[in-house]
Image (cartoon, rainbow, N blue to C red; front, side, top):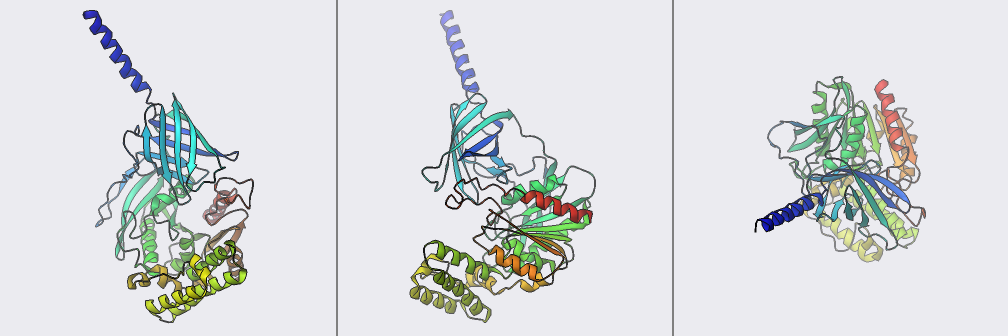
Length: 469
């Protein structure tokens, strides 16, 4: 009997130890994803073993009525499980749908570019498997491999402070990436595009600038994430005031060189830079990515005309789509009400059936609240005069394959200003986000939508000239 009890105890101990060893997922892993013979780097921090869904973010609640701050050495908010990639300009994007049984592991992540789901086999300190992408062509194959490097990720060269910044009608949730050095730092604030409204979507850029020695502020756009306010009724003045409040926050920091504070903005954010610079003297430099000089109505006109032509319609129909947007902009500027604009759009779409493939479609409805917000009222703004009057050193970059703003036209307009404060450049084979164009039809030897080669180095050299200067 005693022998049997000892044998049972040994078997239970072996079983427990075996289960513990067969579940080695937690820790910091590095590796690659491969597609079409092209690889990109990835690193994953598994902080939980996947026994529960760890996709929700835990960035800490903030007191919207104060400007209290907290600090962490992790370089980001405290996500459970995250994925990063220098090539794809991602920093600690939260993983979702995590499952792990010790022999296999699966998880997903979503960005503005795509949704990816991973399925891999666990073999000691190795994980190998396949990746599926939403709307992925059937003949496309993506694989990944990971090796465990350590129990915790490397210590970053900066810390991250959480802040709540008071603005007009909103409390803005922000994070400040601060280099771990005692000297005065240059500073930069990152501005969103029209759809990328959360701060973690720009954490990759924050990491890039922080490693160059900048203090970097990223924030949730008003009415999004942890920021209060109403995003649907916000105006460009509201967005500008939010950025100015962030500028003033950086200007007051004892660790920031007050003469070296800049703004970086992509798409809508880049478009607004001259407008913001006209309202404050704090910025000493501006970096605009894929900015539309004349405003959102012209961007909408271009994007829908391209969409119509690419769907098989004639260039003439593309021109009609563009002119429809310009007519709407003129109506809004001249004081037409929401129902008058709605009526024009419906009648125009009934006349031209291809307008169903645009943002001005037949069954559209425009509420009074929406009409007062950026999507419609923003179309009356023309930012050309602000670009014309810029007195701040400004870098403007475009991608050759941008399908949301016309890179050649905008580059030509800016250069026609003959303003020696503004420098422009168009990157070939790059999209609106200045990532490599993912278009197998145009580029048969297609690559990942990785950051376009030369882009970050160009920005690095330019900002260093501005700082030295």
